[in-house]
Image 1 (cartoon, rainbow, N blue to C red):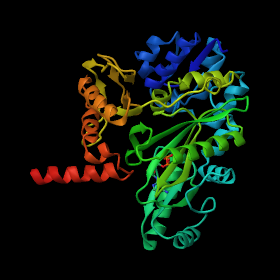
Image 2: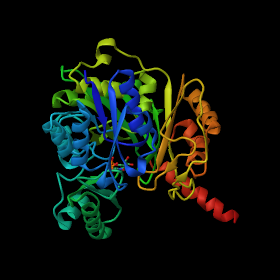
Image 3: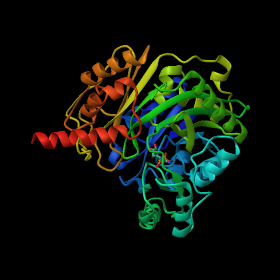
Image 4: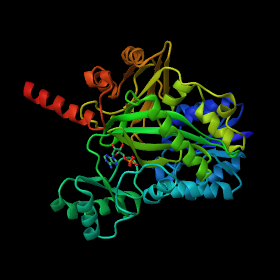
Length: 454
Ligand code: ADP
């Protein structure tokens, strides 16, 4: 087992990894920017190394600085968390070339899944159902238009190297295609440095359901059930739950088995998430994330498995403990993402947290790196924490979440807590009958009602 691990990340996930290391009696080193000098991760890690100024490109994305810190502190392995360098194949490769272990899959698998066109072709060949679409990247507007006409509108144009819900264009009619195609390519180039785009059939009212998978170097490959991430705004997840309120046991087992078989055939190592759209009883593969996800605690709560610890064990060459010990799904879990944003306009709200109180009690987990007096820097993602609640069933879970939200105090900055309180009171949420379009439609209605009142 490793003696010391370097964490190339910040915020709640850095803390989460430190916690796993401590329970495994592994030393932890966190790297940080000057803006994060007083972060909780820096306080709680065994060691910390400042690697650069606030801008991510100079610190959390600065590969030479991170590798230097790893060499200076004598770590065995590097955990990339999520975001930043976690899906950067070049980083994974360089980590290994410098004699450290990358806590994640092989650089080749990251590369293969990072190109979404290649990923779709790969999993299609390995037996997963994919969203119908163009056969690879689309080289010209004419080709794209023809593909779309053959498939039928609406369609969605997506960046092959895309992520974070950015740069997608939905096209409902042929006459709008050419302009959308050029916009998509320009945005793809600007955001991801690669203007390859591809086309998919646009599913009008699906759910987003993803399967947590895990593989080790002993030939074991398993799935740990699903998370339903259909509560989204602008293609970004706000709330996740598991199990999905609409899947039957049969559907769950079938897609879980297909997913586990896929990664076994791939020889995939570590944690991964296979994302599907689900419509009219059918699954359609969208993409695979080759890292730990923000919403991994949902799975931890219903399985009792520490996914970060498993990642570390598997990277160290040990077999999955869950495979040996087995596990059982228990109850229901919901996670909400707490962002430092105005809950109505979603404008970021960085600044000092003047007062803070974390919720508690049975089944309540608060994963965050904030504290009273903490200053949220304006340079990074606005997510400041996650509230995760477990209950014996979905109904209990929602009631527990409602009371836990009301217990939470974050003053000095605006947060999305009031938005979540409102979401979980809506009849469509309570009945579980929502799709990825639901929240945005509901928010527009809410806004219209507000204007009508004024
Ligand atoms: P990213 O990597 O940027 O998050 P994804 O491919 O995972 O991109 O898609 C993000 C979200 O965009 C999905 O959860 C879904 O809401 C929407 N989406 C993507 N592809 C389609 C599609 N073919 N039809 C309908 N919605 C889609």
